[in-house]
Length: 470
Length: 101
Image 1: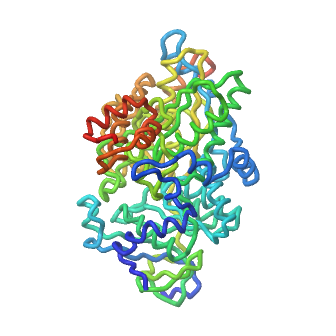
Image 2: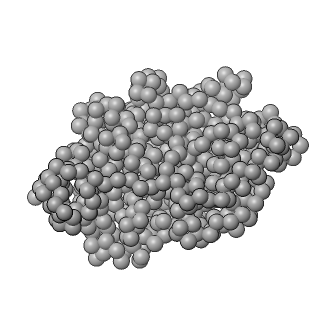
Image 3: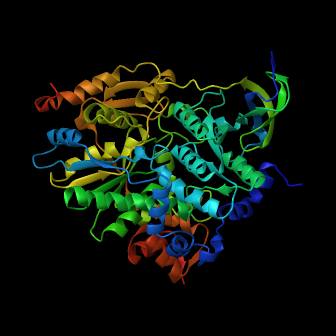
């Protein structure tokens, strides 16, 4: 009889994971710190051409790239003369499950089917659950989605409840939990009980699936404008969106495309807090995931995450909740596109960053998501107000997450805030080293790749951390 | 009210009591249990509030307290938020010269 206590199950974590993702991560290890990322991506997955063929067959991808002409016009009224880049958006809401997450789910489900698994399980409160449910339906796989959904009073986040509905619409079983990271314990128990495939967001399959998004947006931009985008903006949470998109862009062009990540600023809110759970209006795409996953990618549910955003990022900015709700309404009323708020995080950043660029330059916002009851800017603002959050017009810089939502008094006040990427890179090096005191040359090379910096940067950082290179 | 075997229902159960929770969770979360809700087909006739067995969509057997029969969704677009129409008017006013008068 297996020990089903919290401690008992957590102690079997590695064995359960190895069986449920079909990857032996030890094969790619160099040392305690370093591993061969590119070999993991190549051996444990499919080529870009194969991914494209699979996605074409199962209703994923080839979403339109749309120019936001009216928003661009507005931006040019705010910007200095000659400034205001053309803004395009990749309308990922057109995927069957309503978001780009269909790309991530497509390979996981295809691979699970090929390996002979009867079903898949995923732990997510986000669009990924619906994506796995949708792809499972196509492949005839059973599907369980484990969600963190309610606070201790039984009040559910409307956005998450809507996603539960969508998962159930696609025939999935939804296991809903109250707040807490022990969701992972329930997830492991279910993997053990069912023997299903772990459709983790962080395997090479989940990342390779997004490469098509980066590839498509470059090719579409070239076809529609005659050139590649100058800047691509990705909403960032667990890092997969940035990683997969960047890898796809690199396969589409040798030209420099600046890659910017954007997260909603939820500073001060604890993600595992029962009382703060319903005081936030964004359940993903926020700094509560974005920062910890950037500074330590391997905190995910697999031993080595394939989502490693610092390898690719040029800039990382935040926007506030009020700014994202504002541009969500702007997208509806100026462009006739009603989309979900969380997917518009990168659009809010684009409206700000476009003003730094010249009129002949191009910014691509690389996603939208579906909207509906629960996950609509009206639904989210109404829920916030019910929970005592003050909603007002003013300067978004004065917003206090969990207390206020400040809608910009004028569109000029939409201003993406720069995060210190150097600081984030240093934290990442510190976390990857952990307790290890002596590093090899291979480790140093690995860290250079991990944070996309020269050797001197890494060596200086290691010196500050009192680490020795042997 | 007796709920018939085979009905589509939702159950609730406690996964971890407060004292069993991970040491990593914040203080407020440590004070409350980790709870679970799941739906399935009722395995025997029962009343609301009774301990029951269900078979879920993946044919798993789960036990817990019967909380709802024919569980429905009640999430909506929420109370009207008047600020949204103000945002709409504001951004349209910037393009007034461009057919948005």
